Amino acid sequence: MAGSRSKKAILLGALTVSLALSGCATEPEAESAAAPRAQAQEKLVENLRAGISFEYVPFATPAEAERDADVVFAGRVRSIEPALMNNEVGQEGTALLELVPTNVWKSRAPGRAEAEPVRVLLYRARNAPIEPYREALPEGTQIVVFGYLREGIDFDGDIPDGSAYELAPQSLHLPVGNQLVNVWGADSGGEWPGVDSVADFDQALGQSKKP
Image 1 (cartoon, one colour):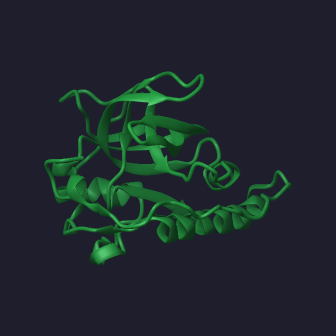
Image 2: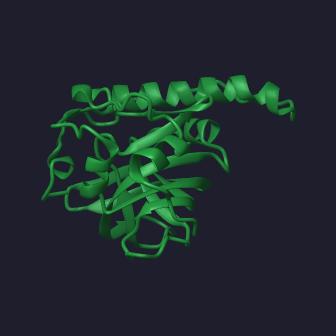
């Protein structure tokens, strides 16, 4: 990810934490499911922060981060799959998220919002289970991503090769309960106080486009 502050961030820790979260609620009532889901979301954020960290010069505002990123959007989770990416030194683990955009602030096609499902690479150790990701981010969960295009990915197995968006510091905003949390924003003081919902991003970045 060369050519920008985020793309030059130094990776300090590999995601080697084997994530193990408690099970989800079994009652269909939304209220009964909310608390266990929030706990799973909080645990996932904690483990992502513990497993990988960055040294970087933080962006002071979402608008600065938007200028650096290739795409900025909110999307709902369609699927999460464990994946391995082949590279020159072996294999790299990831959780491959497929997101359906709901709000688009920046697209690779100017003037047009991304409408198709978008693939995003979320850090996962090769041996880490996928269940904690699925428990924390079930289908339909809305997240915000500042993405950097990675092309020519050679996925192991049956996952189609091609491109996906990878993440940098301050680029991933996951829900914990009713608020979005800047997962790595705390590194080097990169949090954006008061920006914890899609509506807040609309205020910070301007009105989003609807696919």
